Amino acid sequence: MKLKTSITVAALLLVISTGAAFSSTENRENSFQQPQEITREQASGYEKIGSISVTQQGFSMADEELQKEVAEKGGKYYVIMGEQGQKTHQTIEAEIYK
Image 1 (cartoon, one colour):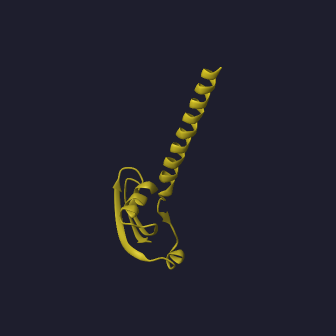
Image 2: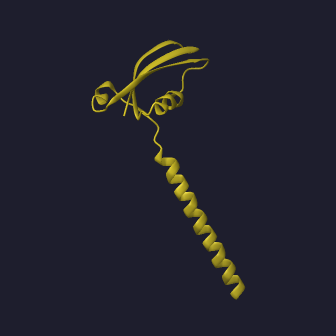
């Protein structure tokens, strides 16, 4: 009986410690926030830190790629100022804000 109790307690402690470790890892991953597209009116409340022009060939540009470029420049928000091209070749110009 004592051995079963010890194994049960050890298993419970393992589950608790693993869950806590997963939870703290999950919180760190969720603390990074992807840059968000905002309107020109909303942008007036933020500091402009630059502009980017991103060109992609192939399929239409995915938001993730534009967000990655904005994040690399230190931006939290962006405003798309213009789009040129077609689905197979597109250039997007955006202003970056923090």
